[in-house]
Length: 239
Image (cartoon, rainbow, N blue to C red):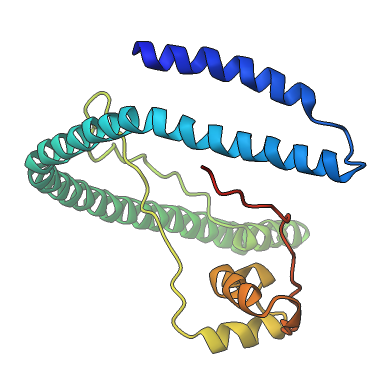
């Protein structure tokens, strides 16, 4: 740190402690009012000096940061087009393989259901033959077995389909992201009023409302809105 900054820091700490110690807990006279006003002027002036002290360092740091950001942006711009090409190629291939696997799975499921239905038909046909040749005392029991079998869902043995592809180690897929876009604000407001949409779907335009509050102050009249006054402050002109 430069010597003049060290000197300013030492002087600042000494005067800060002295000035802070002189501030009363409550103003009880015009003299104290004047004194506290002078203390405020001192703190305001010191704040200006502190900002001026650090300004050159902040400008230098900001210049370096902007240079780094520009260099980073330029370097990234060289890679991004080819990264996008790779992303599109990989996404297209993965989607094609997944679609193929879905078709194979659908075909396997359909075939398994056909086989299960064929087995069921054979079982029912066998029971029908047994019912035809069985004595009258056993026909009722066999008929009950047949009806129960017919009412039960098919027992399908699905054969697993192998994974359509294997991602390289360290690669993962981020699911697609979604966002909402308001295309008819009036319809949205009416839906909230009817209770068909959450109140959180509507957000107040705080920038607009704050501007109205600054202009109109306590005269602002908007249903559901109140004016909140900030803390009053005394502004001091520094020497």
